[in-house]
Amino acid sequence: MFELDRHHEDFRRTVRDFAEREVAPHVAQWDRDSYFPTDLVPKMGDLGLFGLVVPEEFGGAGEHGDFTSLCVAIEELGRVDQSIGITLSAGVGLGINPILTYGSDEQKQRFLPDLVAGRALAGFGLTEPDAGSDAGATRTRAVRDGEEWVVNGAKAFITNSGTDITSVVTVTARTGENEDGSPQISAIMIPSGTPGFTAEAPYHKLGWHISDTHGLTFEDCRVPAENLLGEEGEGYKQFLKTLDDGRIAISALALGMTQAMLELATDYAKTRQAFGRPIGANQGVSFQVADLAVMVEASRQLTYRAAWLKDEMEAGRRGLKEVKQAASIAKLYTSEAAVTATRIATQIFGGNGFMEEYPVARFYRDAKILEIGEGTSEVQRMLIARNLGLPSA
Image (cartoon, rainbow, N blue to C red; front, side, top):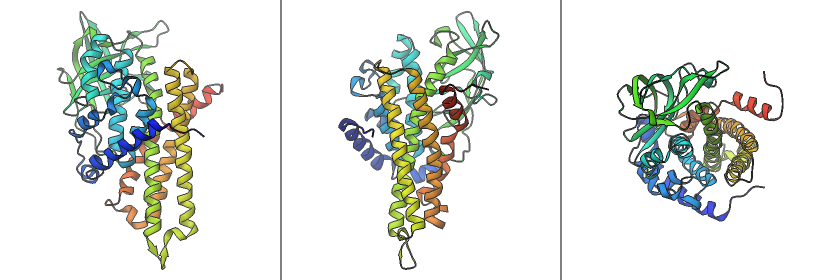
């Protein structure tokens, strides 16, 4: 059985204390108001949560942090509220990581210190109105005009893209064609406030009410040529690598949700009385709680094994294919388990589970997106089968 070391468990307690103190008392109201707590982000930065995979020279944890630590933080925040968990997950995985991995020294020095400190957030614009799982169908275009890129197009469902502290969004765009006629896709950094860059009104979402999510439009949006992230034409490879890491992070978020469902359902089954005894005395309820415990253990093993493999790969001891397979397996199982866990917990709560004053209702609304974001369940099954050597369609 895979177990976290003492360092990670000590860190878990630190993040749990923070979540219980700074997040838990407020999330019900934030959720009702669809309010993004901008002032919470610097507090997360002060705790070091945004710098867990970042070198010390940019304000990060350096050798004292790793990807597993990030997953611990996402799990503990997600246990209290999924929106706050995804704010961290996207802030690091989609905001910081592309810059850290592919950025020039100047780009890193310009953006990373504020992002790591929580003074700013960054987004990653991949999905479009007509290009989701089929990311190769990207229609946003960037045309070189002297020492500038001129960007036109639209993005959809972009996290952390329209807050008061959003500093930059990295977007994928067509910058030409490859020799085989396929689109050449590059990644370009577009700072907030750039003329022609508009974050549309926030979405009215089923869940994740606290998370910041916008559609983006670009109309003759001009940015300097040096805002290209990495090499021209490498954007497709860059976002595939970004999604691999993001799938493990989403697994941690899903694990936090399933853990919360186990705790809430167990407490309720012990205290809720029906027919003169706690409802947990009934096998119909106790068996459901037992199923939640199994889901938590399975989700924990898959998530942290994948995170450990990611850290091992960064140290040169594991290969990319093994990490990709573990990430897809973890993401598939944990996201589907979380959806099932919220349904079970809501059923145990009965009529109260349908009332918004009980947190299971909020988690129930938040669950479904876990099966969609960072690659749908169908995409994960396709990737797992492909990694097993099965022929693709």
